Length: 340
Image 1: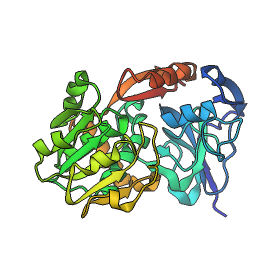
Image 2: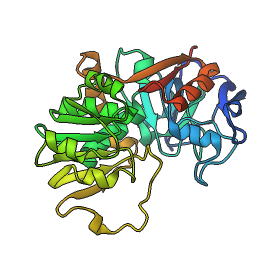
Image 3: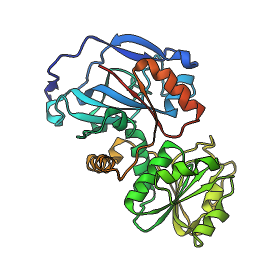
């Protein structure tokens, strides 16, 4: 059996965490003193430094997740911090900077809204950076989703044209920045004309206002149709998105910001002849450590922008973060930084 490596200073017996005992409103997010999680073989215990706040955690708090989510539960599907304890043969030494996300954390087992979290070693991404925790804490889930969508979902190449439907979402903003780093031309949508400048600031070449019917606007910019389209609005927009894509182009369905995950009476003949439809719903392994390192370096050099909406300090501000996320008034990632 692998021997554990432990931090120089032993972890305390208890920690502070946000716990949802039963579903409810913002008051269901209760700060409690709970035992520090015991690490299992093959898992890593992380001292959490920051975490992003996501729609998935709002859904968990409200009790609207699927049956795999049980209560009481510490939410949090992503986090960044330093290794506290790991198997000796994992290569993860105490103090190493790491990120983690997805893999049912915060759903079927306790997540990152806490001072410590334990996760399988396979979903830990080591990194080294001098960027502050509030920046790094914004990245794991949205970068993994954006990168996976652009690569596995769309196989986007330099010189191609990408349409992002749902461009002011955190994934949409991240995808725009990554696509520009790849060398693509980016068309991105917003429902509000006043947010066009926000899209341009992330590198979008052509912001367009989405009134539900954008195919004609997109064809004005790309007469043959775009090479690739990232669908984040959902099934209500998908038929119109198909009309934006060239023959042998690809649509990747990644999100449903509009709430519609299915199409009633769907038939494959709804897909235009020659247009490809894929989907993306990946895990931490889809963001390799070397890719994450490249993205961190691009941020440090100013080539890649991070869409941070607001930074919160301490578990006491988690309720504020979720409230602001639900309001939808400020695009970008809401990040909670933990103080020692």
